[in-house]
Image (cartoon, rainbow, N blue to C red):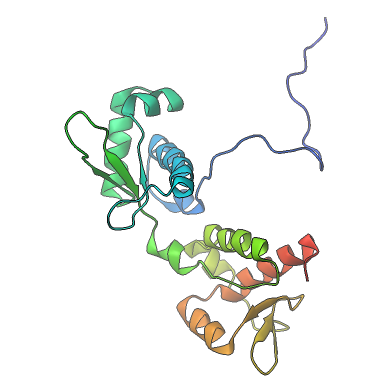
Length: 206
């Protein structure tokens, strides 16, 4: 009997299937699986809001997503979505703002301060790399990761008159003042710089 193959091994030149941005901090937070998936789905929709500049009077990105559509997309009932929303609101990760009679609420997403503080903006020679590496560091810097990445300062810094050249490949640049300020904010900076340096090197950018 012939077995029908419905999948294939991932290979180097194979494009990834569509995926959702599952934030790393969700791994360390006490929420139900449904609440975590709901936040992930809303975060994915928020990227569309950013592109379309859907902001309120205070400059906050908002999402419009009907409960019935959320329930359908997550494959659960509306009552489960309602409970998941309550969890996220209690965790201060979302806020719903009523927009008027018979109109869908505006959903505001929040990001924990620990994640925001780890978003190290590093200017490299390629602007496209700046955007992607900023996102990479922000996602990887959870409290547990910061503690694990408390590395010594060997071979990390080579200074010139204006900036520091950081990382194993000396391709991450910060001023001395910026480096000291970030170093004081969280202990895992050097480990993140090493990861960023390796990423930039892998792209072949100088």
